[in-house]
Picture (cartoon, rainbow, N blue to C red):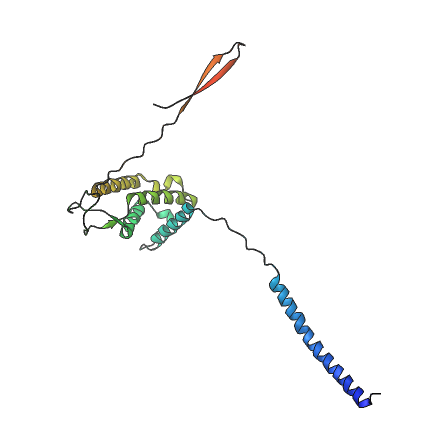
Length: 209
């Protein structure tokens, strides 16, 4: 038989071991909860519709123009903007252009492929400016502007773009060719009487002349 001292040691040992288990158990439970939270699937963020390339470029152009108006002294608000501000903006963009436009005194004026470098300035290409105005004209009305007061649709802007187009074509020796519109077929309907006296329609497609 075990002595009372040994029984007391076993009892104390059991109680001490039980104390250790009781101390570790909350830690294990806490670790289990943390592991469960890490393994739990997180809800996916709400996806926003991706803008097209055109819409993204239009937004950037609109923000650039708005910043240009704010940098004026004094700053110009959108309702105060007119076609003169748009013309100044287009001339301002020329400093960032990458198209070589030969001056009248340049030896390479009118040559599409100059044999050497020259000191003529770089300008924004006419096609880039024309596309820019188209995007800004649409953005103006999308942001609350009225079609009747749209400065990007002003006749002065069209005249300026036409002058830039013609001058760049002469300076670079690359004539501007207007794209021909495709002919649309005309739909003609001919009525004819059948044997039963009912009227039937014959559809014929003919090319426009």
